[in-house]
Length: 413
Image (cartoon, rainbow, N blue to C red; front, side):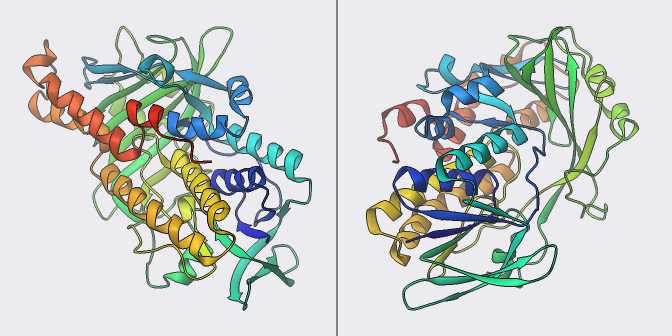
């Protein structure tokens, strides 16, 4: 009853640990020859942290991440629009973590090797196709170095192979490239002084010119700050370069953010202090009608790549993994388990993808910029408190992370 998984990212590794937890064997096939801690900062929301805690990883997360305590929304002039507590301080039973994506992936990777054994993850092997058998499924693996092909057999196949999923392309060959909404992101990590609570996430500006930052580690003199600059471009801008390792230039963004120097945060200095900057477009894909086809299904970014708004990409991949493991435990390693998983997770994540296209909870920034383009003295004269609360509460409920709902629901596994 072995489950075959393509991709050793956050979703694939979380699935492997979840399957091990319920006693179901699996193997992961990763196309790269060496797994490295790539990427920049991400946030893990309490609904995902709950699942990692139930996998016994909470103490490990505390060693490599910071517990986020607050989110602050501010205008381009530095005026504070709204702030709210996060994680434990907001009443959740589980924290929110700000963490380097690569550190999270390597924690999951090491844990899979420790619990499932060193042979559970096979690197340098790309899944190029699959054929269903009478009682299982055969996947074709191509060695990335030699080109040699081999066959691996299992009960089910789960493609967690990311934004550029080979499996998704095979299922939907006419889908085309990812969808670009006009925003290009520059991302970096800088050392700087602690700001606000020292555990705060700041969202500043508006959709067409936004700065986001949060600490991911403490340093001797302050914080290691993960940051993102968003800028809007015309439709004909050459955007098709979604590469985490594409170098970005300070000169391309600094002039747009020079004015964001406040008594509580010096945005230009943070940008200039970065050792490395990466540039890539903000992209997603249209929601699919279904992920499951017989004995195979999609998971994580292969199933529902979304804009990094609302901090839900990695969190939703972890939830995918837990729900899928639950259905396999309940129904067995058969197509019915995949169908049940699909019926729950496909529409839920489609709603988040579309909400993120509408700027998710960040749309309060756009409302303020529209109503008070030159700033404000009193936010209550610009935006009613009920509008702010409704925006935040609505997104949390949509994403499955409202405090009461999460604290009171039964465990997935």
